[in-house]
Length: 76
Image (cartoon, rainbow, N blue to C red; front, side, top):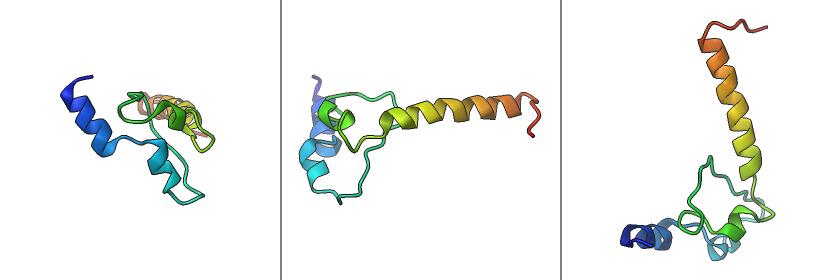
């Protein structure tokens, strides 16, 4: 791991300890792609409060819809 990655992980990385200090209703989001182990711990990304997979899936559909409309598609 490079020095910049270590600094990022220590300062900004989302770890289990940080999640445990969050409010109980907190959810974990990330638009992807994520740098596992640096930006976000794997157990947090795959944990019970993570909506990352849903967020990424919805993001694809939203981008497809925007491109469709920008390229002249008709909305209903």
